[in-house]
Image (cartoon, rainbow, N blue to C red; front, top):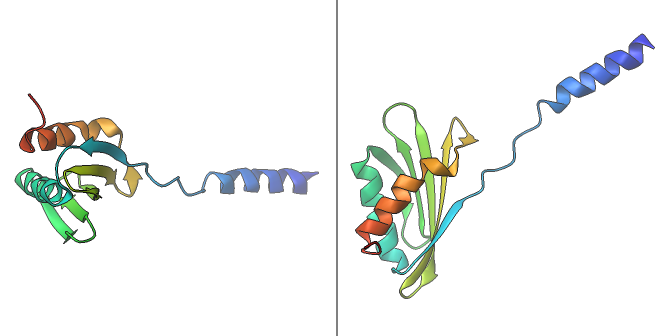
Amino acid sequence: MKRSILILLLAGWLAGCATPAPPQPHELQLAASPGETLRKAMHLLMERGYVIRHADGELGRLDAVLARMPGYAVSLRVTGQGDDSRVAFIATRGGRALPPTVLDPLLTDLQSRLGLLP
């Protein structure tokens, strides 16, 4: 009896150690070329204090970290053709996904820089 209770407690404790689900990207469809979108996003992030750790125009990928506290990391993927692009942002802190509201100012500023807002 004591042994089965101990096993149940141990199983419950270990269940709490499960890895979290990977963060879901915050996606946005834009009427701008993928190259221009990636370039403007890179400049935007640098102006806001992010350090670009990796950027690849052919892959449409950009990874950046905030150079000051609280230490956010942003991962950006751009896909599309011609004058249409799809942007997927993921923001993390300490390996944990941040809520989409953290990304809203970045996405709004990106749209403004691309001339897509009134």
